[in-house]
Length: 310
Image (tube, one colour):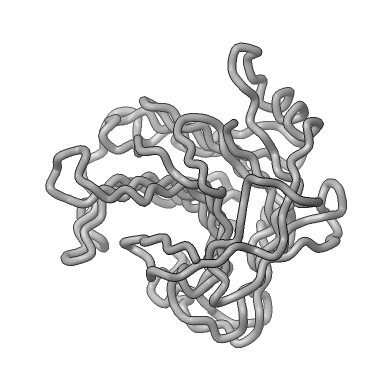
């Protein structure tokens, strides 16, 4: 058994998965071309979820299952299904989650090609699909009096699948909900940045904007964007002084979602696991109104590929 303690999420016991995955040299080569990687930098490796591999395992299964399936729209016809059970408990620890094995990663390129959870016909339920880095070292390395909570998130709420949430966490104190985090929410259909805010208290007011933290001011629109019915790619490059997120339009052109180059104290710096999950939230509503009811039927997401540093 493997226990991963996550301060802002429900701690949960985890067990190794019965499925395994395989990364192909061809996939890594393709990503090198797509990302324009320098020959001096090791290209990221891409899991295609077609066989066995040492890279990932299932780390939370109390609320769902992870299995390889055939699915229309996947580049190779295969994907990893993350299926959240009907009537799950609240929080990621009660969802379904995968993580990089014992290895941790730091600066480099991460991403996923994914079809997020589809809640069509289920009403205003609270389900989150997440792709993220996460450090289990919650010491106070930055010396600000709060436990560190290093995390980089790409998340979609199933009640609003046209909006993508991007977040940089550095600190969180469970006792009083004091945080250090900056988030951006983008309506991908219109290209509007709906929210770009640094807070020091959950639910608190946005702190004054700093140079480099709110760029670009708008994003290239992607007509018809719906990450719950279409496979979409989300990537980010994490460096000590910058985190850049991007996706692709309907023609395959790269579009920058967020190029954060603000205060480096707001950038995570600790080696982290790379993870993906689907879980029920009871208190995180999308920007268009309440949506936190418990899903009464199973809700799947499909991961076509997952990219992580070597």
